[in-house]
Length: 338
Ligand code: WQD
Image 1 (tube, rainbow, N blue to C red):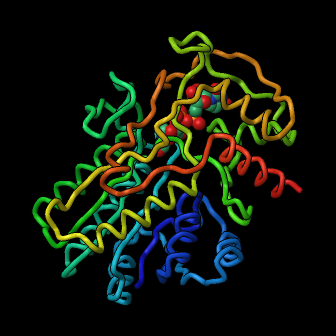
Image 2 (cartoon, protein in one colour; image 1 turned 135 degrees about the horizontal axis):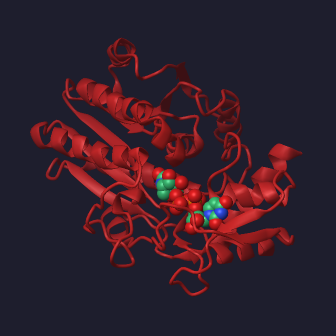
């Protein structure tokens, strides 16, 4: 069965391609290589022994999207990762984000709604909750005003899909709200490849560990948490990838009762920045150099998932511990700098 993965050479996309191939799906990848590299294809094949069909394409070119679906009429499901994801950049270049993340989404849905039956999985984010009033965060927690154009594209993206599903029973879709995916494939053939100075905590830590960065700045230690640093739900990227395959299987199997659903993808466990640093020190045997800095504007104090819905409905649960995930990130960092 043929599945399209857009952005399939990116961080979460590549790990999902591996899990799909492991389950026997035939995968077609579309990627414009704006934040990824063709070498990732080799890493995927080194793990699974299988080749994905790869089309280098920019999905903003609507006629190309149309031609693609005309050529691949046998695609049974789409997992749509292709999007821009840097919060800071989105503030400077809002139109780029609206075009990449929403314009493209509309083109994809326009094609899928022409099909007799279509299944669609969307990369959403816990960012839609903002600072939630209650922890852990359930899927019915209110969506708060977005802090950035990036966050807004995830909120509006979900609304576009929901509205489209409402009037198109032939389309079924699932939006997966990721908490903080980290780590790399345990084979260390694929992992995260941040461009420039990482904005995210774990790649910054591992780059500091290998000596690429002098020290980590911990953004604030005066928050109302146990140790004063912010709390997040860090989840192994392989667990996130597996959830996509399970969500796809649900769309392929289920009768079309509710054709739009939303699930949190997290571990259900909150970890503070200092806990992540300690985990790194534990798995690497190295001391991490860090300093306490001011809070980062826009950061919520804490966010961790209630995972009951994903457990009960999808039968999915994150399996890896924080140490497993941090260790895989560290192994990957050492491999790519060797
Ligand atoms: C984690 C914690 C920082 C860097 C991410 C994505 C965002 C959205 C939600 C995507 C925070 C602290 C970080 C550093 C630090 N999801 N930190 N020093 O903020 O949860 O956002 O998830 O779809 O796009 O970026 O993750 O990894 O940036 O930060 O102290 O150098 O680490 O303050 O508490 P965040 P993060």
